[in-house]
Every structure is written in structure tokens, then in C-alpha cells.
Image (cartoon, rainbow, N blue to C red; front, side, top):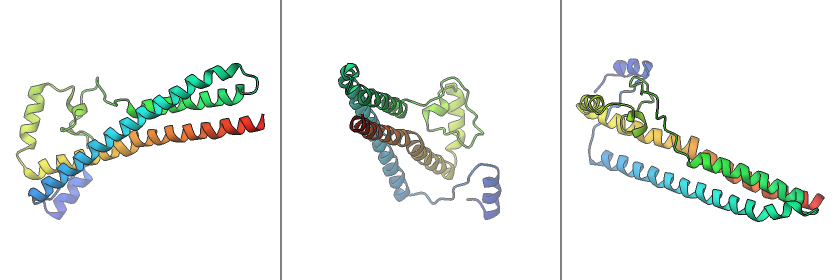
Length: 184
């Protein structure tokens, strides 16, 4: 357990000292939160795949109307917006792991529980690091809390943000296409 001054100086250095009294309730909370994040990630992937499929079908069915003089511009607009939808949804579903850079273990973003952080480490190096980290229960809980936090940030700032963009682009495309049809 750290004192208040130790905790403040640790936080100033970019590392956080989590003061916890472990127990079943904390373990259950972390397990439940992780499971919830995994479920949200799966839902995001399903939504992204759904938007990719829907937009691709709309592109396929709209392509034949590009040669029609009345429907050319609405179809072209719809195809353009659907293409943007596919790009945003694909980016949301795309894995974002750096496969080439050796991890900086001193970085506050380094997460020894996330495969993307240790994928470029040798097993012996990873094992030695984990042996050191698991000696202190507070450090173990801190790693787990950091993992939950990073999963949530990733879901919010990457997956769900780009899925939201995909939905917005798609709906905007429908509206723009309808307006063009009415005005032309």
C-alpha cells in the first residue's frame, strides 16, 4: 500500500499506484466488466459487418440506375455515400495492432495483458516481466484495471466511433439521394 505522497509522486511520473484490498467482489467486478467489454466488441463487429453488407448490396442494386437519365444522380450519390459507409465500417472492424514495433514497457499505454503489447517480445522477456509484476497483488489489480480501461477507451474511440460514422454516412446518403431525386 502506498502513502498519499508516494501515490502523488507516482502519478506525476506517469504510473499509477492502485490502492486496493483484493477480494472476491473485486475479482467478480473485473471479470464481469471484461466480459461486458468483450460482448460490446462482438456487437460492434456484427454492426460493422451488417453495415458493410447492407451498403454493398445497395451499391450493387443502385449501379444499374447510373445509366438511367432520371435516376443517374440519385444513384451516383447513393453509391458514393455507401462506399463511404463501407470504408468507415471496415475501419471499425479492422484489427489495430502494431506488428512491427518493439513495445516500450515504460510507457503508460503498455499493457502486459493485451497481446498487441507483447506480441514482439521474446517469451523469456515476457515471462520475466510477468514474474516481477505478479509479486504484488496491487500491481496485479492495477494491470487488470488498466486492461479494462484500455478496452473501454478502444471501444469508444475506435470501434463505436467509426460504426457511428458508418451509420451517419449511410443515413446521410439516403437523405441526399432522396433530395436529389426530388430536385432533379
